Length: 82
Image (tube, rainbow, N blue to C red; front, side, top):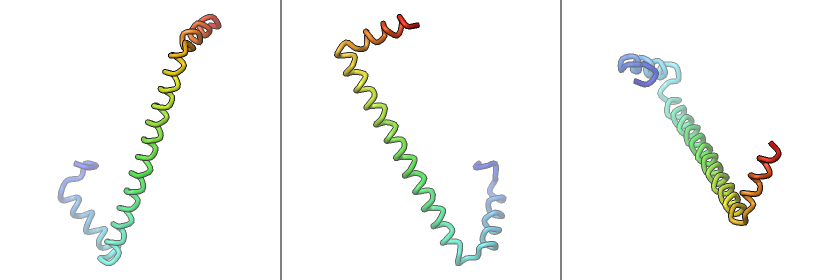
């Protein structure tokens, strides 16, 4: 149950929307909502991909530093300063 509405309540809401916007505007309204949802999904997917790329890049950099032995030295320096 989305938002706690039952079947009869959805019918009443849909009839009210039909009366307010009319049958000619309804497909246009639905198309606009569909485009907005598509753009939102596309933008959120782009953010997820950027975040994943950032994580993999920082993980590779950290691994490279550890391979060169910089990881242990940096940890010791940090402990000495604390």
